[in-house]
Amino acid sequence: MNRIARRTVMTALLAGGLLWTALPPDPLGAEERKLSAVEIENKLIGNTVEGQWDGSSYKQFFDASGNTIYVEDGRMPAFGRWKADPEKDAFCSWWENSGESCYEVREVGPDTILWVSPGTGKEFPAKVMQGDQL
View 1 (cartoon, helix red, strand yellow):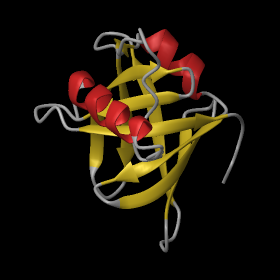
View 2 (spheres, one colour):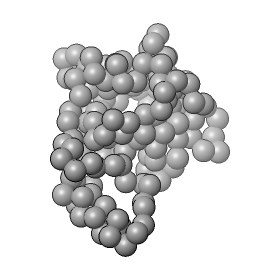
View 3 (cartoon, rainbow, N blue to C red):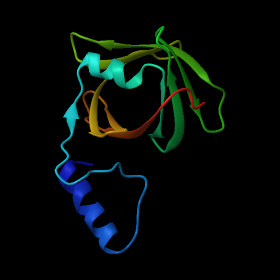
View 4 (cartoon, rainbow, N blue to C red):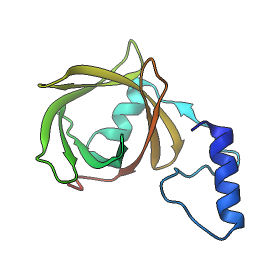
């Protein structure tokens, strides 16, 4: 969902006295901002993200060593590797079953990021939580 559409939905929900937690916060004046590789590392190292990926809830922890654990509701944990690519300013992860995938990471709030799928531009919001929350 683009920024204008998200702001429109948030305004409508707030006017109705409702809060829809599936949308990331968009404080007035906040701008989506693409993170650099260094910012991606600073945001993720030693922390957990929580979100929805294609309709499934997940949590993922990012170790400083480059190891990552992905836990999708109702499934066994998946173990992979991750890095922030300084040439692309992108997040890249490697999984045994699917190989490497890289994503642009945008910050939309102090504790909210968007994973942006290459090629499609599809966005996946996620909350960044301090420490290992698995």
